[in-house]
Image (tube, rainbow, N blue to C red):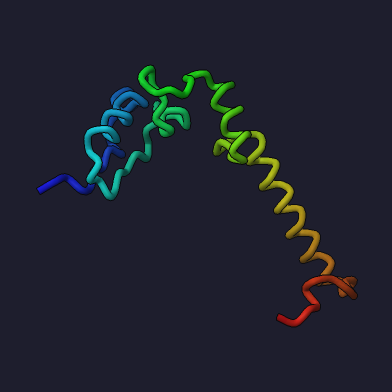
Length: 112
């Protein structure tokens, strides 16, 4: 049978890299589960499959620009942190206003 599950979470700090990940993805297309936790040498760029044979550039700045054009953000980026912070502020404000009974209007009053 074909290998369906692969756990590389204990691969060692220097073993599992972007290059190895790309080789796995290219050659083990029947995987349904791939555990890569605890592998700090794998980057966002590596998970996107960028390499010299790929027509996309390996330049991080060009990658960021391409992602921005497609309305995507890199996990852990400043943009993601800003989105999370805005969401948290909204949630805290709404909870605070509801607790104080201040809200007399708003979409939450509409029936579904």
